[in-house]
Length: 333
Image (cartoon, rainbow, N blue to C red; front, top):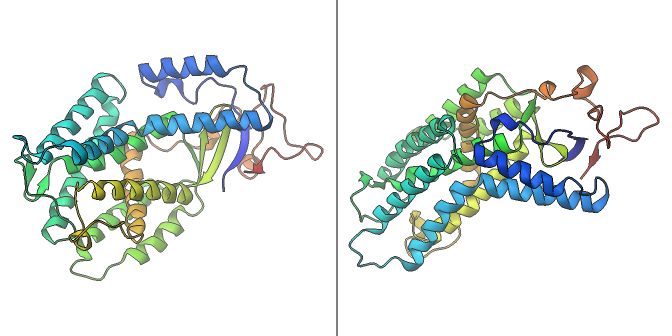
């Protein structure tokens, strides 16, 4: 469930965290929208538009990668001198260079992207060896059976997560101890390998994830309003979108699963569980660059009761403190 909790008086969630281009764009957009209605359906339309635009901006690496994969599927000639997989690798590398040189992605964030790339490529090498999925065998830019562009697909997930952290000024209530989340992520990663030889513990691990993250709530800023959502719900939504992108990628023959060898059909919904668990690994890696910030660090945040009932930010024209005579500042969406 997502609920509105307060108006936000600041022009950006954490301006210092934006890159230069993002900061300029953020200020320009806020200049356009500063006279937008503060209440009613028009206000919520503005919030929805801002949410969509921020999500699209956070997905720019992944969207570019997906566009290249689809374009190669539709238009790359089979008899081209440059193999399709090599072309995809060079295109992915070019996208990454553009992201950094144009400051759409910071060098600090690049560390997480590289970690995603390494962790993903390592798993790809193993999974292709045991036959979990396969790539076309053309091209020279590869490790074993794995073309190097595959690591950039994981890097796209890392890029999205670090960017969404900045763009939505994410804060967390009751975030688990980081050593515990790291142990959970390590267990998930190891199980991706060992379940081929030992018992598959993913459902037991899934139960552990629910226990560890079940009480954690994510707070995020859209335009004027801050919203909150259970972290497990956020993990699930991201997993769904990755699964949809996976369907597009397998349709484009970026890789194929054994049951798609005779012809493409949608990826099994059971893969959603794997992507959900991948979110835990992803969040731990992102937390290495951006340690989770508490809700209590927000301007005007109260302690104690505020964690149970979110008060509006003092001083904002549209805000009111919660009192017995005042309707609740939270309402289901």
